[in-house]
Image (cartoon, rainbow, N blue to C red; front, side):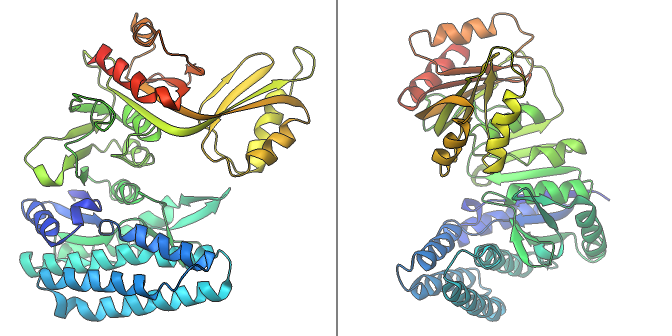
Length: 444
């Protein structure tokens, strides 16, 4: 069975005009479609604000809840499906209010309650969009995402249970395709081990689409957003960026991880395991080809794109024991593991290791433990700049070209070797944009 996954992000479903554009895109596709939608633009931010206000006891959140309800009622009215959607909207807003009261009564952070609050955005948008599609296109079904995607908690992270998810999808989705070729579901939302509503993290709708595509052996996964595709760099930081026609899974994953915001970093894994092509396209310029992501393909341009992340802290840890002592690295990473602190980039020597982290909420406590067996130094306001391209290590002269381009800028750290497609630099945050522009000029 030919199944395509079409995911539409928050800006693609921001208002009735945008949603009508989505419906036209869907109408022009004859395949069996699973249409994964995000919350309408800014709604998740409002829900996050509600949680923050409750936990900080700052203000009454009822006005924000009513604002979200009115926003979706107006949207349904503009799409001519208010009568069909009104009962669901009222019930969801009532449920949201009750969950907010429970969180207020708890007085402390409660992950299950917070997950349920954050789910309201996608629950509302997916139901309204499904009703609008059904009105304009005929037979369209809506299915709750928490009935499909199952997750477990491991080491503080949400991990998709692919075996259970595949069983759910094949049992509940495939029969629907006997009566219609269009199914709408919420992105982001999933079900935890106890069946309670959970989520895949901010930006997780891309990952939802990839998980569904993997489990259904989809012929393609289409990520519809508000840009023309994946670009050679961030256009807000670099002038004269260019569209990349094709990327490998590994290149796309590296770019997403190191700051390119078009794709969620986890998206490539499920797609690559089944060799499913991923297309990144612009909802507002649907005629453009976008970017295609698939298995590695060598092109004349070794360097494909330059990505960056800021607000990075560089931690250098030097052993205070004798040269050649074993067990040093193990002890270092045990500390970061103990505090559940993700490490991004790593470089090592015989007696020292340098790492980058984003989460500094427990940095002081981590440094205290590290200082029991080492000498540490933390350097804040750093930025990671990743130069990404397949075959980067095998192509003579590329590294020289990189360093020649930024010869007048100090570099805090260099990492190359773990990945065949990425050379990573750490620089002062203040130099970030200058570094990216110089590198972009050199290669594009």
